[in-house]
Length: 113
Image 1 (cartoon, one colour):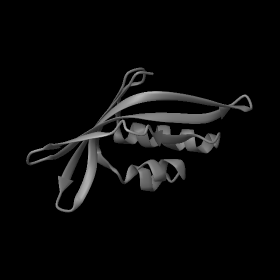
Image 2 (cartoon, rainbow, N blue to C red):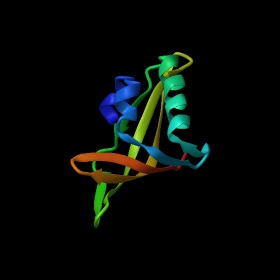
Image 3 (cartoon, one colour):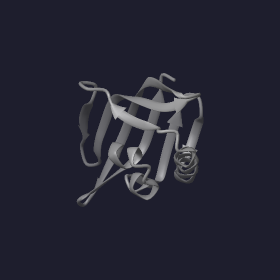
C-alpha cells in the first residue's frame, strides 16, 4: 500500500481497499471507496512529491478470528509546499479482511491531523 501510494499508482493503491470501504477521517469525515479514489487521484495529479512513510516501530497487528486483522500505526506524510518540504505524522487504524488468499482493507480510521 505504501509503495503504491508513493509511486502515485492509483489502481495499485486502490486494489488494497475493498469496494465496501468505510474511511473515517477526523477532519474529512466519512468517505466511501469512490470518495477515496477521487481524493487520491486529485492528490496524485498535483505531483507535489506527496509520499507516505510508516513510522518505524509504530506498527501493531492483531488478528480478528474468522475475519482478518486490525493494523494500528503512525504514518508520516510529506509533500512540497511553497518550495519546501512539509511533513506531518498522523495515526491510523486499518481493518483488513481475508477472503481466501486475498487481503483487503474494509475500514480505515485516520486521526490526529
